[in-house]
Image (cartoon, rainbow, N blue to C red):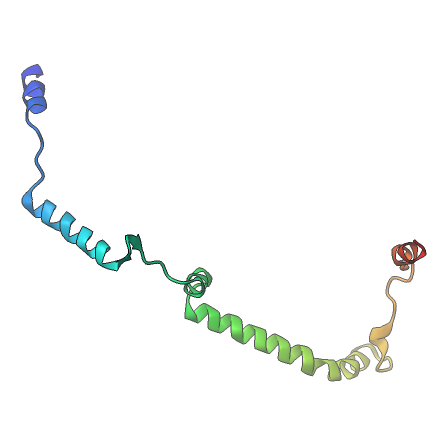
Length: 113
């Protein structure tokens, strides 16, 4: 076995010409995309877009934001009627203090200063 290992150590491995051609082709492709020796990177907005998941994800986020705004603005008018229908109380039932023992003591302490 030692003779085989010795023969293997004496033979220098040579890459095939096809492998060297592929390596050089990849190197030329990278050099073509570089600007002044640096690899061109996408801009900040392109990086943010890809971090969020691309245009489909941004479309979903935009839709959710617009619908949240629309629901927040539009639902305020019917909230009193809905509360009165569900609880059987006047329309201003959402103004009930559910925790009257919690005062604004911290705010009062800061104002006394």
